[in-house]
Length: 394
Image (tube, rainbow, N blue to C red; front, side, top):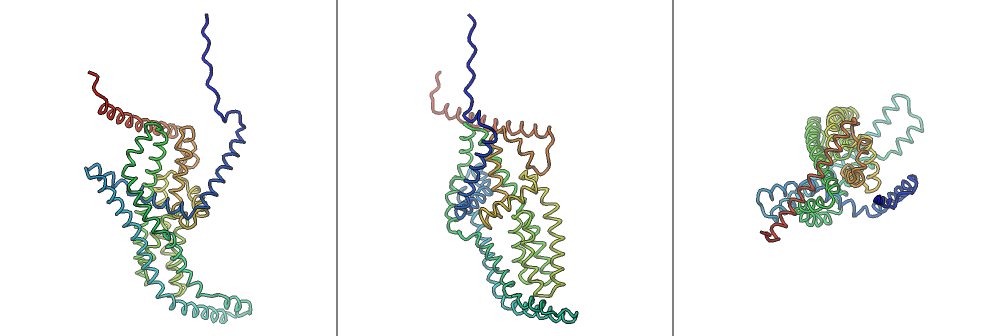
């Protein structure tokens, strides 16, 4: 008698639905998710900032534990490193804003004098029409000077929930000490998910390292150039260049505006032009030519996508979203693309440089091999634990 063929597996629940309907349902879910994140941006932004800082310094705790240090030592070291970074930036910004506040009244008077000089210059050129005079009279350079303070205070407001962030970092530092065990547990059951999260952590650390190194280089060069030109508070503007270096594409412009305005009020248009030229030469070479190559290699995102990420996350999370645009995009990439082997091909569409078919195939094989290695490592630990618990049958 001829054996019956095995019954085919039941089709997935989504099979039979038109692909267009699936896409529409996915887009509708994305809109609801984005609306939820935007509604809770005051919580989501600080939480992700704390997560990014802990992910950045987590290798320090892992290294200490490998060297035989107790877990609590690794937790304290991680927490102190994060606190030093965060509180150092906040303190430097606060002190610099206080110094700037003492200079603003003098610059307000210089601003009014600058308007008067422009009016007299236009009069010498026989351009003294009522419309020009009215336009100049409506210019309030006092508010323009206040714009400097507003920019820095807006940057400081990124850390407005400082107490919440500091408290959250304590709990995250404890959780980070067991990150390796957690990932091995996930890798045992779902290696692809473990691979996605490890890719996010590795990409975030690479991005932070590259941005920090180039940010320090730009900050030192900018501060030195401003000091040589006699611009007040060069350390403040160097610090601003360092922080805005984490903002993709337009961070250079944000860091340029305050020192350019100070130069205009300090020494007139010629000094402002020199500041713009020097900043442009330094930052275009470093931030627009050299750094994007390293950042693109580190995170695997195209220039267009980084700009769109800046606009999107800035709209969703506010100023903090601009600073976190790249790490947030890496998290979304991990959750939507890297987590599933069947969707990793989409990385070719968002990469800095398009891979060839051979490179794409190699990347897929490497990802599968890495996920398999994580699974095998987790299985080996499970077997060792079972041998310690179960008696030897012999």
